[in-house]
Image (cartoon, rainbow, N blue to C red; front, side, top):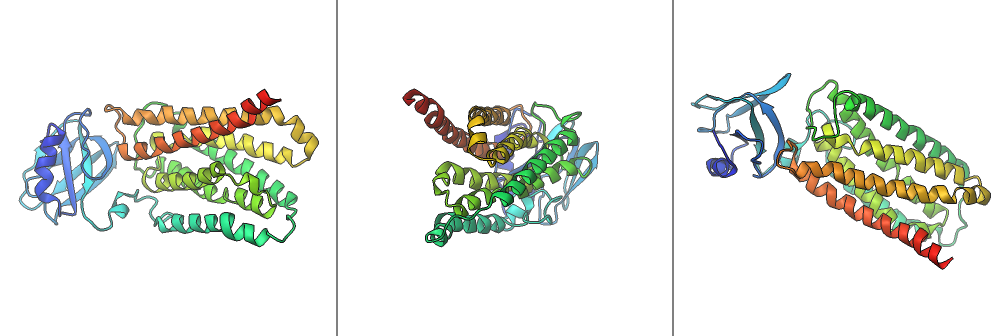
Length: 345
């Protein structure tokens, strides 16, 4: 039985070529930063580590707590209480597939990161190269009716995701603390479905930029706009594939609520210059709400850094810097558009 990171690391060193290794340690304060930690569970565990081999089998049984039985040829069985299990996937091949949540592996556009790479590549090619070239000698398309319908669908879709996420555990089970991901089919599978639907919706969001290009509003195709769309697709893909549940779903709530307000504003702004003038103050408030949203996301995600938080550290270290970058870009936009312009006026 391992009491700290060093003991676990040294004991596992001879077995780095096996398909699966497992390590047990008796304190939540010690984290096992060895290779890829897929998840951590507070469990009663029966383990053997003396004779790990290719025949080693790891079984997870869901009955309240997660129980793990590791079977190996000639292994010694040891019993512990309220331990933590970190499953380390050490094979060099198919590591990404093994780290993925098995509940979602067959869902559309989740199986491989190639989907995301192709979608993002086609998007960037169209909005930065092919689209402007195509529109170079053409008049802007009148897409008012199409965009109005699109904005209505966005309001409805984001409202649905907000309500669906809220009622999938946030009203009675999940709190704002460090709530771990649950890899169970019911009701947590519904929450995983909400993460996947958000990922799909972020792909649909790319139409925002395409509408700009087809209307020859190239001044709105800014670095902030493009980076925000691309990074959001990447983050939601990783969330849907690897971490679709628990506290990781918190960003869906403020994000979808903000998007309901945002697309409502876009819908009203289509009515013409007079309506746009009336919405000037609301537009400033909307940007402020977006900045507050990012602060909430970083504050909530920062709990994952604490040693006492039973949550994978890798997604936290990827997520927070991205949100900080987006906050910085939005804040620069806010300063340039509302503060500096106000001083000049």
